[in-house]
Image 1 (cartoon, rainbow, N blue to C red):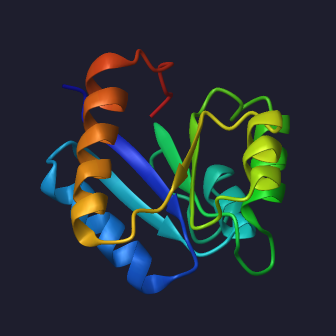
Image 2 (image 1 turned 30 degrees about the vertical axis):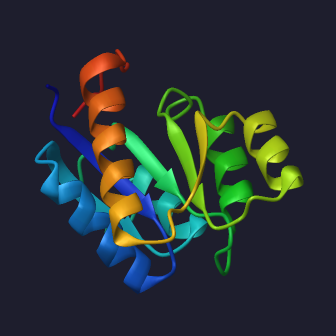
Length: 144
């Protein structure tokens, strides 16, 4: 099993805490990072202040509805930058709107996941992420 660096882009602190807890229980995290919007995610990836010493993520989990720069715009920007195109981005959001789903896949999201409604669903999701993304899928090598 591959240990992973995961970047969570999520403005809701409570959701971020619960997602982190569920992922940590699966014991496959090398590093877990959390930023609160798309602008911060891009600063993180470019290793701009205060992110100069972070390790690049193997996987990004991104909410859609965030202030300053939402998940759709962040996804478009990240996928337009040659250095970051290969990083899988999973949209993890409360929206089940058809337009959001279609837009995310058109913007090259690797997956679209509606957030589970309870902690048990979140634990199950974390287990699936671990199984699929750290055991089954071959991810591109990172520089870090």
